[in-house]
Amino acid sequence: MPDKRIPILNHQQIQQKLDRIAYQILEDNFDETEVIIAGILPRGNFLADRLKKILDTIAPFKSIMINIELEKQSSSLVAKTDTDLAVCANKVVILVDDVLNSGKTLAYGFGVFLDVPLKKLRTVVLVDRNHKSYPVTTDYAGIALSTVLKEHVDVVFNEEGGEDAVYLR
Image (cartoon, rainbow, N blue to C red; front, side):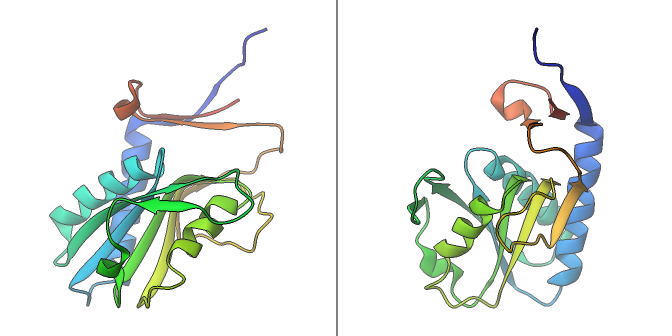
């Protein structure tokens, strides 16, 4: 029997969530001159890029995008960035991922910035599943979705060859 996918968000709803999150980021950082948008690969970077594009049109501050690649299965922090983290010093960093499940990915994402003096670190997720094993909270979430552990949330972006959507299976 094939997996049945239940649609949660469509393209328009995802765009509305991202617009709202961008305005929340703007309100929280209106006095900044520069904000770093850090997307966690493989899908957090798509959200981060979209947030950056929205912020570039509505915000007076400059936004800089960086990508973070984490080895999520590792028992210790193993991460690579496409930009020297020195650009983040004394700035606001917005850490972006697609789904918050256990919190491990965001916790590792925090670890990337432990040796960098930041003004503040905020988190963005499109879907917060409320199954945290780590003491991680999100500052901006598109949707909070209560699920059972055996269910899976799929986030699909047109950058990956599909149409923007969030599914529960």
